Image (cartoon, rainbow, N blue to C red):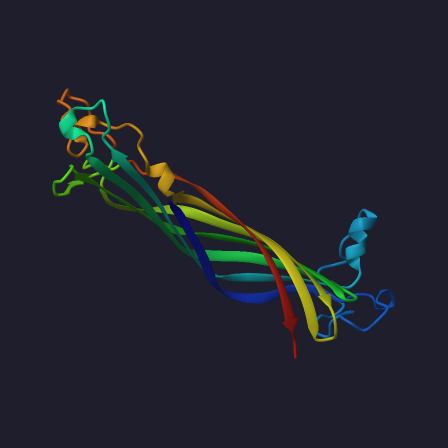
Length: 265
């Protein structure tokens, strides 16, 4: 049984760097043709080159910078459960004995850092396109919790509970924590269409990447010392204490689609 929950939030200030008003002769109607906020001066002559790029010279173009703080959290868990029963040809006294083996691995990552980003906004006639890039750099607090137990129930007898399952033993059970430097970049595209002068329909895509996170599957050590298993009768032969815990981090990325209605007044 696996679960995963990701969430993020930010507080930002946004400042206009430059903007160019569109050419009125290219508009065809008054909807978003040029902006009273932006004057004709700004970032130079605009986009040149190929015809498909020159198309963006039409309409209103502006570039804004954003800066602030970014927070993100990723909580995940992995639970492994086995229901076992002793059957023939095992020794008669053991036949019918049941074992409930439970291994649980959970991880938590919390990011907090500063963020810098840029937004490019283009509007032409009723259409608009916003492209954003952001980069956050900060600290990720990594937490790993490992627990396990085994319930042994002989036929007609009381149940006994032992510490550890199969992949969780006294050699790796516990809570672990550390801090690592991480980066969290994000890119996004949002298109819009003005239904009226105030009402806009929007649709967008976002990609987010997060470095140096811990995930539950990576914390599993598949080397098991049978001497440590609960209720074992395996004699000791000097095998190292396994499984053992070692921090193993990896990368995380998320894709998102959005659709919305925007009303301005």
